[in-house]
Image (cartoon, rainbow, N blue to C red; front, side, top):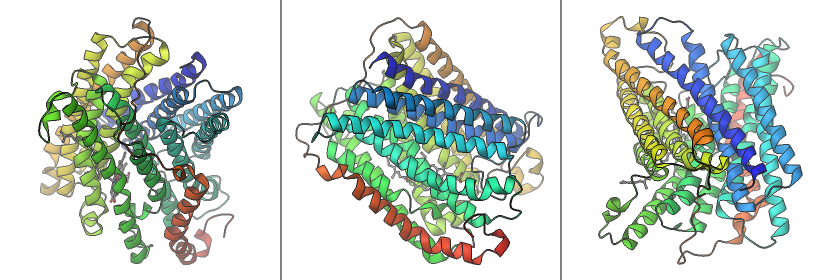
Length: 540
Ligand code: HAS
């Protein structure tokens, strides 16, 4: 891809690497404080906020946007001047927002956790930073939509390449999701923190947050799926099982990611059971595209295995290139995603949720979804993407270091998330600070699990240090040359991709109809039942 496009993608990836370093440091310190290994040098909740925001928002978003720019450049060729300028404007707006948020957290004026809903309150500058961050991403998505429109103008009647279609779908999902978080910040949290209002509708703020929070997890997952669908088949020497199936999975994510936020609020009294029930049912629909993805990946692996002479259902297992970090890291991520997905289905089952909600089980769940399936895929991607963007090559030594890094990450996460899941089932609450609460017989039972978490967390931190060194090496020290941008073709036998998959007006309309169905009545009830002073600002 061109130098201009590479610079744009690399700028984003570079910031994501910085964010993972800061986020991991906060994560390590926080787990050591919680276990009582080190004294409380920083507030536990302050570190927890830094950890969540740096990894869950800054690392993921910046890596994703960088990756999507690279995929669009590979799919569309050179970017025109206007979208490139908008893209850089988006980049700097995000940076200013992220710096403001970070400074506020460091100053202990933004200790509101990564979920930042009411009644926790931060300094107004924290919220202004968040607004800038979101506006920056909107500019990035606008630039991407423009690139897509330019391509369609120049290639009428042609399907956009699969990675481009998936990238556009990912940003569209993000834009619709962030409307919820923008609403709670602009109409509730910012006015309250500025002192313009003195009460806030807490349940409404949580609802608007989770309207955003659930699609957010698919915003993290979809770029990993892009790599699983389009890059991994190429790395193993195979082809994409079906272009149409892959596009349909992404379309289903757009439709079903939104009307499900209540599965994070099943224990909350302000929402009627009927609407919780509706959203639980819809949650089971959003599982389908992941099952489709699992099916498609098994098919790709099996077809490739058979082409290499493998026999039987699982003969392919012996034929995969495990010595290639571009394959191994995402593959281990997929393996983790099997129990992770099963855990998600447990969480979503209303009765079982009562057992696990607000326990460390949930923390375990998201460390093996976003923290492993997604993060390992991003690591595996970075080992070829960074050299591609920097005009360098992935050397054998760096590939080997990558395998070690992915291995230590998987090992650390396995220990840590096992301990989280099990002690969560034993009642260990999440987000409960330092070890002083280990005072009675029940809570003392959890101590060994906390030790496991601290050991796992330390191994993870070492893995991050190896990753940061590898990225430095691949950016500045590795030999110059042309690294492969691995994107697979589709199997010849696959069905043709229907045109209506690109009928954006139709799919956006259906998405909003589903949102309106799932949220209008419950939100109306929330507003109606709140005491007059707590109904928020502007609207009521
Ligand atoms: Fe979740 C809480 C339900 C997926 C992240 N989730 C969270 C939180 C986060 C998060 C961050 O219903 C905590 C939020 C907070 O701070 O409070 N989650 C689900 C469900 C799914 C799901 C139903 N979550 C994710 C993903 C995430 C993520 C993905 C990040 C990327 N989650 C919940 C619920 C809660 C929740 C409740 C609230 C809990 C509470 O009470 O607070 C589904 O999307 C999962 C579907 C996935 C599958 C797996 C498919 C497997 C594949 C791999 C194939 C492997 C191959 C290799 C081919 C069905 C695709 C095979 C090789 C061999 C050799 C065998």
